[in-house]
Image 1 (spheres, rainbow, N blue to C red):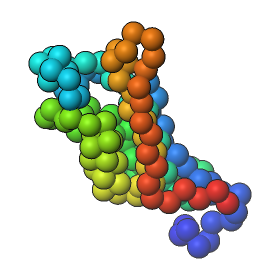
Image 2: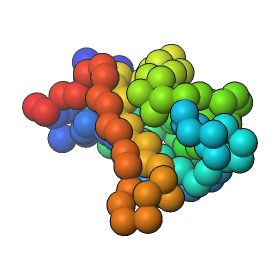
Image 3: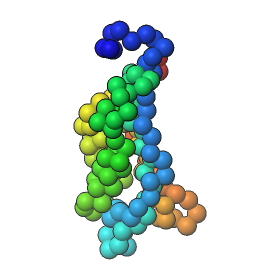
Image 4: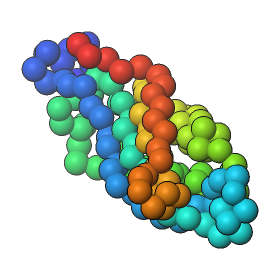
Length: 132
């Protein structure tokens, strides 16, 4: 069955979401941040556009494997020291946009312990996000 032959009731807009992924990363401009990694949290949404409500079969090869997405997030955020949240989130968004079938990426990266009284975070959205 091709996309063209699917009825409007057998397809939907699909988004893969990873929320609350926490790990340590070397990030920041302060001397303490350059010396030791700090805890960050990443939330990611990947727009996969219109997808069949059911995959072609019940096989991981026909969908975006969220284990791979999780690994990419951790690798990109821990591969080297980055001074700015803006740089890190841009690099991560670019890498996730390269995954097959990904139409759009929304990310939030939070520095959890930079201040005692608040969390600092940045969000970014890129690509296509269909609302129809």
